[in-house]
Structure formats: structure tokens, C-alpha cells
Image: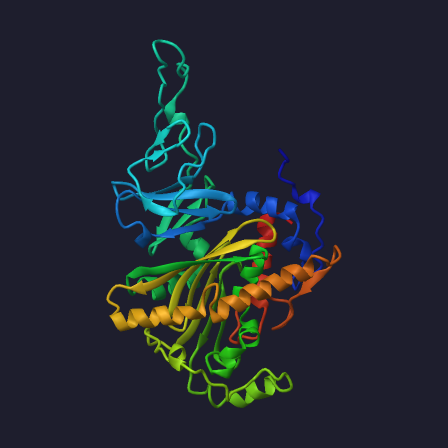
Length: 422
């Protein structure tokens, strides 16, 4: 079994202290990926696991991934929530094969070692042997052979877990902007799950982290948004970062000046042949759903290190979770949300606008293909070459009140560099 490499065994060149240059090897090197599982997913980090509405009843469970570790999240009969690795303490067999469901206990299908919903070992068949022969030794202590547990904290229904014995304070980890937007999106109204979609993207998980911290690409890659007036780079908004730069609130706001500033959009796209304000949809219903919060926010993309995105795109509300599957593959799991009290029409409209996001949605389809192209393109790049992150300026990594920037991506890399020990 190969050991996890140390930082000194990974030769990466970070030439700019403001992280406006990032070595391409972080997206392709298997040793970097192995070290990420140790330094990020198994360390002092809170990882998103599920939302409480998915565990409504005692015995409910869902499975999820924390880096390469498969975990089970449960609600016990005392209503407490627990999380543990989906691997038997006996011989390592996978315990739970369903994605979600309800169970009274956790039983290994191989030798029937049985665990409580908190992950404690409760029973070992033939522990006393048969007819005085065999069995476990007198020194065997069931209390020492429970499942590997995660510490669990819940905020506003969001369930977070950490393999660390001493994780940071969850509120400090999230930061004030994340807390305020979680309250705005998930606390003012009680969420309910409308459905799920999964998208496998042949690209590194950190490329998606770049993508959601990059409002610059929104009106370039997603041309329909500009042509239909859904999103344009002149909109009010910007980014706000937490204290250690890892979490980003990327937002745009509707205003009366949007139509007036259309001339700047035309100038910005001049000569590209991509901007077509006369383009019409055969069925424009998708673009005409009113914003139900009434506060003018067109988009809120809340990116929480390392793998959680809470997103409002028009009237679509979703929790996106990244599940790394190696250096060049990530699964994007999307939980679509409605709210208790929504009328049938409002539920229909949320399902309608969900076509923006998802494997075949107007937005996610293009994002996934863009990340595939990046992953393919950088495979042949020579060691020591770098991506360039200078849109919005270089130097200090700080909040902006404009959208054409890559500063928040540099914030991600600043924290990544620190936590990885580079």
C-alpha cells in the first residue's frame, strides 16, 4: 500500500504570492489528489453531509462522500444526527448500499456485525463461540470496535461533518456572509426537497470551485443569458469573502439601470458575433418566472470550502455538493429545494426554472463541457506552467462591487495553498 505523499515530495511552483498564477499540476497530479484527502477531507474542515429535511423520521439515513470516504448520515430515535464511515470495523465491508432510506440498525451483510444508528457496535454473532469452541477472545471489547465516526454540527438545517477530533467553530468556518445568506435562503422559509440530479464531470473538483467563484464567465460562456437579458456583466453585484478567503458570496442584483446600460454590453461584445439581443425563445415561460423573495437578487452563489455550493439562480434554489472521484473526475450532486407553503404554481415554476441547472440544463451543461475542455487541455501542459488569474486586477484579495473578476478564485487558492502546506 503506497503512503500518502508529503508536501516535500510534490514539486509545485507557485510563483506569485497573490495567487494570480496556479500550477496546472494541482488539477492532474495523483499525488496532489492523495494529499488533498489527508490535508483537507480528513483534517480540520467541515464537510457538507445532508439537509435535515432529508432525515425527517427516526431511522432515516442518507449516504454521501467526504473526499474518498463514503459516509452514512442517520437520525436516531432520540432525534440526534450521527455520521460514520460506511465500512465495517470487522473486515471493512461496505455496510449500506442504498442511497437513502430507513433502517432500525446497521448490519454488515458479510458476518452480521450489527451497529446502532450512532455507529456503536451492538452485536457480534458467535462472539461466545459454539459449544465452548471458537468465539472472540475475552479481551474483545465491543466499545472499542464501533464505526469510524465524524463529529457533526447542524446550522439552519445544513448538516456538516468532520473527521477531525478538533474541528474549527462552525460559525467561524462559515463566516458572516455565508451565515447571512443561509438565513436568507434556507431559514426564512422551511425547505422541502423537490428532487435530485447528478452530473459526472470529467474534470478536477477544484475546477468547479473556480467556476462558481468566477462571475466573469457567466455572460461569456452562457451567451443565452445576455441575449435574453437574464444576466449581464453590467449588473449590480460583486463578491464578498470570508476572513480567510475560502468562502465566497457571488451575487448579482436587478436594478432600473440594467436596460440603460445595455449599450455597454453591446460594446463589450462588439466583434464577437455572439451577442444577439433580437434572439427570442419559442416558449419564453422559463425566463419569465418572478423572483419570489422580492429582494431583487438575481443570483446568489454561495461557495463554501471545500465542496458545498448553495445557489439561487433566478427562482431555482439548490444545494450543490462536489464528490471528487480522482484527479480528473468529479460528481456534482444537486438537491433542488422548494418551500413549505409554496402554491402548486410556485412549485411548478421552481421545477420549470430548474432547467437552468442540471446535467442537461442550459447552464450546467455548458459549465461541465467547459471544465472537460480545461482538463483535456492541461493534460499536455509542461510541468511548471500555470493558469493566469488577473481579471479584476492582481495584488490584494478583497471584496469587489463588480462581476468581471477572478479575485475570489485567488482567494480559494490562497486558503488551499495554506491548508495543503505548500
